[in-house]
Length: 124
Length: 115
Image 1 (cartoon, rainbow over the protein chains, first blue to last red):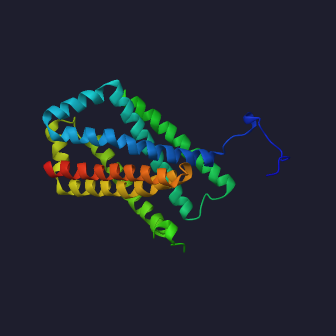
Image 2 (tube, rainbow over the protein chains, first blue to last red; image 1 turned 30 degrees about the vertical axis):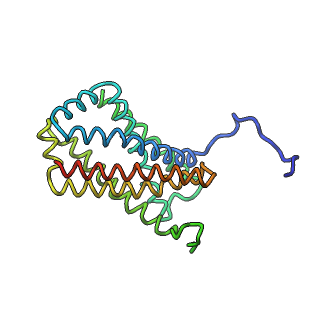
Image 3 (tube, chains in turn purple, orange; image 1 turned 90 degrees about the horizontal axis):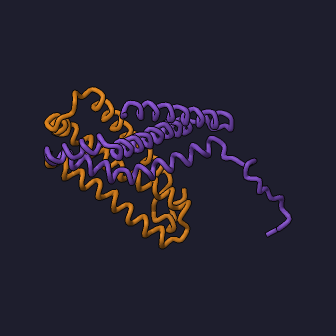
């Protein structure tokens, strides 16, 4: 390998474009939801199993941890669906250029943050 | 089209279509559940059970769980092939994760059976 290539170690001058952030968020939220399903399916199964189980789950969902996990899970799902819709539109040939791709990425990230805030306020 | 030994007879088009077909079902189910939560009166145990007692809801829920299993099979494979390079380790992780995904479906089936 040639050693005399220019090297840029000034990390402050390097940043991911919005489309890259959108891509990594899609992956992170997808993997996160896979593991969140452990909690979701457990809570769903327990709440349908018996009246006692239902009350237990309801008590957990009223507490901080339950609300925190619920917010995280629904927020991840919200992003993943928004990103999925963007992917679907890109499948049809739109938003594939540098400018439109970054703009649409910024817009869905914006919508996601707003929806997450609304959900957080609604839960607490 | 690349369907060689290395890809274990899978092909990209099938994955591409499956990912989107299952995504549609999961998204529709998510919207429906959100709709149920918004429109339901204060949830009590009988109301909660009643929601999942209908055949429509049982089938929809089961379809969503199977879709999640298929969706995750492709999605986690995509992520793992990018970040976990040793083939043996990746195969092991995929084996465990796909087993968990199957367990989600199995739990769902037995829970729905009992409602």
